[in-house]
Image (cartoon, rainbow, N blue to C red):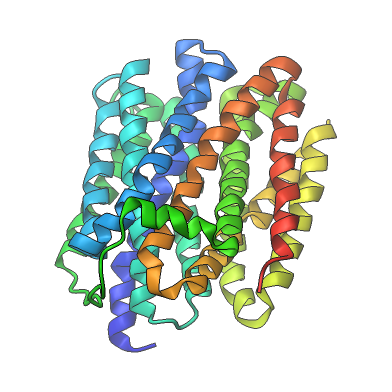
Length: 384
């Protein structure tokens, strides 16, 4: 890889860090639930709302990239993200949080749709899957730091500017603003789009390509497991071990610590191991973890299961995304939009898990995630 490409990747990797801001919704929804005395079903509408916007904005973002370019689309997404982080600093009530989480979802939908193909264009086909996995590693750093920042704000001996756990919004706001400026001043040359721009219907027709449809469903399951574990892991510890929220919040960090380790090691493993083999091994790890989360009653089993979900789920997105882009190389913007629309799984899974957990405890929520794991084995048979 040339020196210019390496220098260009630095601000792009920082954008991946900003992409990780969306994962604060898991721990944030737990604190909002406690602050406002909400039920699981109501509290889970917050992370569900975040990922609902992926259904609405992902495909139009693919079309927007054809008009204003990938870099400019990422810049728009960063501005929206910064605004979403500013709102919770003004008030702590349910309606402000609804608006903030909605904007965070919209900004992240634009960012995930445009940033991945932007990086793919800069790399130029060289180890796309491993580079995207490294980006997921950087993203995971933001993800696992969010619970620590929230815990620090909630329990700090020194005043945290009167923001309690919401101090994490303030810190991420500063990073987001810095990332926006750095990307703005970084020159990136993009290849012009050839031929007629695709319409919304043209984009949806790509789902008629079997591997694109199967990849779309796979990403729905991957994200459902990700958001589901992010949100449910602390609740499992509180239900079975009697922990307080501040004590159980470590579960979310543990998940993202192992997801970070998975991305870091996966960026190497994907260079030397067959993608399909690695995908199957990761899915097997998720299956074992689901059994532990469903039946485990000790801290050791539960912590080990959470860690296995983090590691097993860490590289699936990059493998699936790269597979889909390679399937229709002449329509990468549109395919990217469809794949990110699959993050709508982050809406469906928490809602179903909320209903299941209110009916039969957190084991019900784990059962919903287990269905997603079963589908991943089906998808693995279609990997090239």
